[in-house]
Image 1: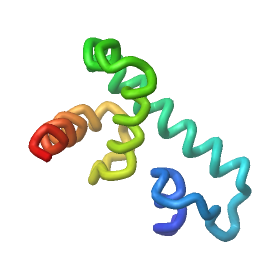
Image 2: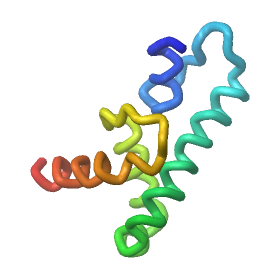
Image 3: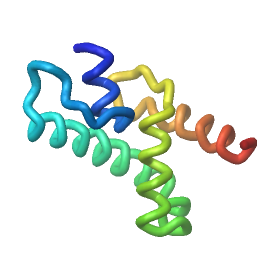
Amino acid sequence: MTSAFYDYVRGLSDEVPAGYSENGMRLYRHLVYLGADQMLGGYFPDVKQTLGDESWRSLLCAFIQSSAWQSHFYGDMTDEFIEFLKQQAAD
């Protein structure tokens, strides 16, 4: 997979990479978001409830776009999300 693939999935680009269908890439982007939402929303339910749906979605999208998260396992992203929140608070 190319950087164009990852950029699209993370929402950094809306240009569908060569060799992939637009529908497939939109679905994959959505699945990445849903996986992050389920994992982090389950781990941080109070944050999700306090922020409300729109702010929570914006926060997750910003995390997915800017995260240096390298693991293929959703369960490993909680520590990275905590670091992301610390950085957001510092900015």
